Length: 74
Image (cartoon, rainbow, N blue to C red; front, side, top):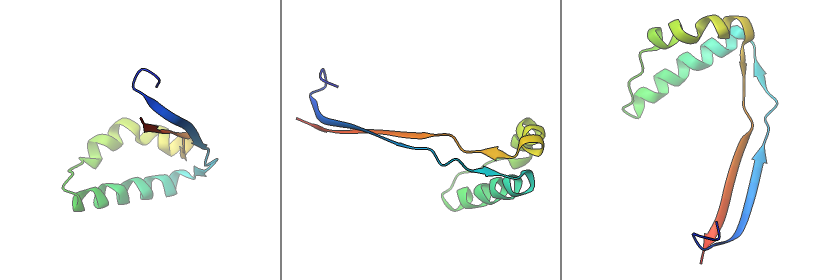
């Protein structure tokens, strides 16, 4: 940060501590694919689901902790 002359550096963290049940996780992922289409992003849900579906069906979906590092460039 100092090397890039960033001052007032601050780290913000958020831990949602949220877990979706398997059926809700699959529904949310399918909706995300639909929403992505409106942004011009194409996702082959079936290929994606072939890779992660078994894990989601067993564990649901756990949201990771998010971190943001911000500062002002001098």
